[in-house]
Length: 342
Image 1 (cartoon, rainbow, N blue to C red):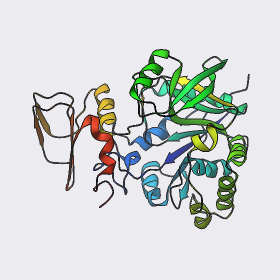
Image 2 (cartoon, helix red, strand yellow):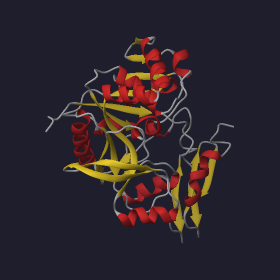
Image 3 (cartoon, rainbow, N blue to C red):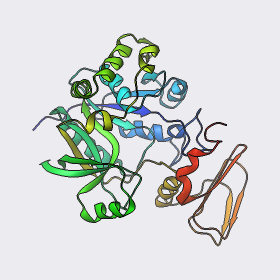
């Protein structure tokens, strides 16, 4: 069996801050907010990818958010993207900055993970597979028939706690999601990956040669100063952005998964944040009063919010903006004019 490789965390900080508007804004999006505790989601991501077995992290962030990364993480190595081009190019920049045999653990910066011990066990298992040339995804054990996530179909076992991925499945409708949950042979695709840098770059060049060439050009023409690497803006912005799932994972031959139940949420909506907070013991972070209510969450940066006789409602007050939404409709918050900065 492969020895336990040292893990190089790659923390991805992207997104426009629209799904948790108005609390999350473009200038201080979700990763940099303390939504599920005293530390921000970004700081939590750094914390669970540190200690024995982990190398110093690489943070890939938009240029505008470099000051926030410095404010919350101190002296970490930053790759500053001049524009967002999705995850495949971002991961390519990180891979190009490392030795080819380095094992990367690619983690979004804005997820909630309740069981960090389970996360670490899965990370070490995934890293061993990645060191053997597998492209590895964390397969999140589903606890409900969720229609908002992609799924991974379990394939042949590859050893204790690991298996090949038989198929990538797009977000299903409700009936199909119920079938997946009853079947037991599916996991959620949580967007966390373990990859050997050279393997990833080879697969990217094989399946998306233009993207791979542009990323390499942007890297080779880039400049570093004060711990911040800035790829060449002209070369990088010419890239047609694509996710790692579409560009690489769904096309490669040696793709594997490590199934894990770790209390995971992508905090992809106000409803998702409410559910995480309820699981942690309380939904409201504000001066508030609720009478004859159920499923109501209140978030306010000052004014008291009083709610009477409502169910499944979320109220957010932030500065001069107020949001009131049915929790089950909160996926549409990003479509609001305020979320778009208008």
